Length: 410
Ligand code: PMP
Image (cartoon, rainbow, N blue to C red; front, side):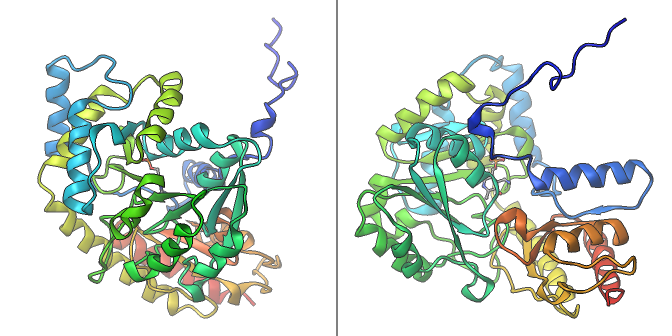
């Protein structure tokens, strides 16, 4: 019996649009960690970008009720009227922005919102300004759509935030979008109104540049930080801003795949054209669940926020106690992005020199059995990201191992 040819033998040739887009480093590390776990090694994974909490019961019940009512068919293309209404109310209630029903869209995760938006607007060579460190999908999606990511380094000293003069210098006639994410994955840094204001003033002077804001971590902010979204600060930008959000992080609903956005009607319509040929509509059951997430009780958010804050404090202080590691206190999300410049140039007990942050995170995985993601995966080195969406006991053990591994470097 002959074996079927592998794709390589069959002469598989990927399209040029994905030539420069590799498999996500985060997924690669996750796969390696999972393989080590299968081999019986006690690996602690601090790589995943999802809350360890469960989806709230009222949300699950709403999904079950939707199934029982027979809401198991295709829905309206970019969101059921019930969910769009809940999204409009959410924007009004929590952000002070008035979007009409035809100015909001719902997709299969915020990731598909980004994909729809770039697919619908980017022509070959169009530029998208992305401050680094950035969530890796941003640049990958821009590239798949034929655009050029313009990456602007924003270091820890700048609070990982883009400054107005950097933005001004980066804008060219080809700039289509500026993409801002607050609180940020991976840095946890967030923009206050005062941080945003000078950036919005720059944008007011450049009417051809549109603003995309990713507010996914809106509800995960600490120490009284006041979350604010750009359109609420500067309504004159509403006609060229896409305000992105979703239920994945706030409501621990990553697997339900629902994201949404508000923006000008013409853009929302263009995004629906892409969606109509990609997925037809988001999942009917997940949309019903998301209506309940947005309209239902919100008090559990405060409890979860407090639990995340305790973990953040634990991780930040443990990291800062390790010689060679420095970590600023993030305003939000559930990540720390610590500098590891102090371990670069050191040698592991096995005689390997740590040349870059990826060598350091490899060392932590192999010797300390802790999986974290190098800054290089997010466009800024030498750093590493910890996702602290896991139990305090696990975090303590992971930090103990990281500290111990660092003392073994010479
Ligand atoms: N934006 C940011 C900053 C994220 O971290 C993520 C998830 N990792 C998303 C968007 C996408 O979320 P989803 O597709 O689950 O809605």
